Image 1: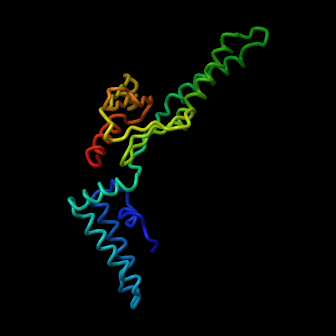
Image 2 (image 1 turned 45 degrees about the horizontal axis):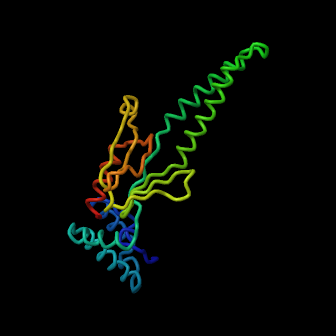
Image 3 (image 1 turned 60 degrees about the vertical axis):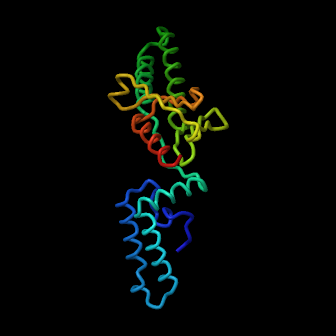
Length: 216
C-alpha cells in the first residue's frame, strides 16, 4: 500500500484513462482491500476509504478537469508516444540482400563494381533508417511536445502555449500504409520539429490538439 504521487497512479491507470477504466480500476482495488477481508485492520480500512475518495474525485468530470490542470502544473506526465514506421528499412534490407545474392552469383573476374557500390549504399541507407527507427522519439506530455534525435544531445521542445499548428504530409504509399511526415510550428510561424515516417500521423495530430485543449 505504497503512497502514490497522483490519483491516477494510486488507481494504476493512465491520466488519459476513460471514466469506465477508472471505475473498473477503483472497483478492483475496493474488492482487494475491502475491510471485511481484514477485520480490525485500520490501515486497510484507511486505504479502502482513500480508494473511495480518489474515485469520487475522478468520476466527476468537473473535479477531474480541475485536478488535471493542477497536476499538469506540478508534474510533467507523458501521455503519448509516436511510433516510427518500420517498412522503410524492411524494404531497404530486402533490396540489399537481393543485391548481395546477385554479387555472390557473379564470378570474381566478372564482378560488377556497380553492384558492389549499390550494395554498400543499401547498407548505409539501411543503417540510417534503422538508427532513425530506434533513436528518434516524439512524445506528447502534459506540458510539451518533445522530439529526441540520436545525433542531438538536447531534445527539441515546443511548449503547449508556443504551439501554433501541425502539418501532416503523406505520399500515396504513406496513405496506404498509414505513415507520414509531421511538421510542428510554434506561434512565430517557424517549423520547429520535422520528423518523417511517423505511424498514424493523423491520430498523432488529433492527440496534440486534444492535449493542448485539455492542459493549456
